[in-house]
View 1 (cartoon, helix red, strand yellow):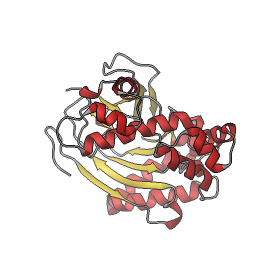
View 2 (cartoon, one colour):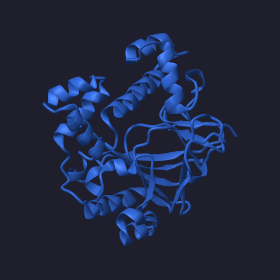
View 3 (tube, helix red, strand yellow):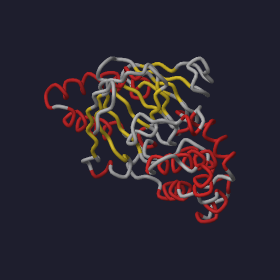
Length: 288
């Protein structure tokens, strides 16, 4: 990973080594960061993440509707150093100091569902401590991972984390194929009504199944995934983005619609969007 000013990053990203976890987890890894900025915006992706702060026993985030750290739409969320961040629907303010040494798991669509007692929508826009979700097992997880890192490094800790996930599964480790197909179609921009027709479901059934397992209603999920398609195009390009062309290509009505959605989901205008790096498009520094 390339170095950036004021930051000395180190990263490890791997796929699950346990075959049963491959359909549920897109990637998992370890990251270190020393950031010059004091506040950062994390942008919504429509997916859930498991996070373990190995530097300090604390994690937090708060909702924000603008780049001003004083403009918040929700209360601070604070937990111990091991937590599950459900799918969120608005930009979240996070502390870069909590990313100095982090183990993370990025779940695939509906991938977190087997590890929860409740439907995924119960964790929408929430940061939930693993002690709340898994009791004593969640409470001691961070210490287990610290011991694993000391003995064998981050790779060993990730293997321990895989074992813990297998132990804590509440449901069979088999994603609902219909919900996964719905998520894939919505991700490609297929209209919600067409997705329901393709699956032979009523709109109400589609909404219920997606809300329970993805954590978001189909229209909300499609909206966030369209935003993510836009960010991929922006970060893959060279030179200033052609926002009018991107609006047409990514499924927005026009450039004004794109700008409105960008403000709603990022808290900033498109021209103010400067991610931490091209490889980290969902992390936007807010200043030193």
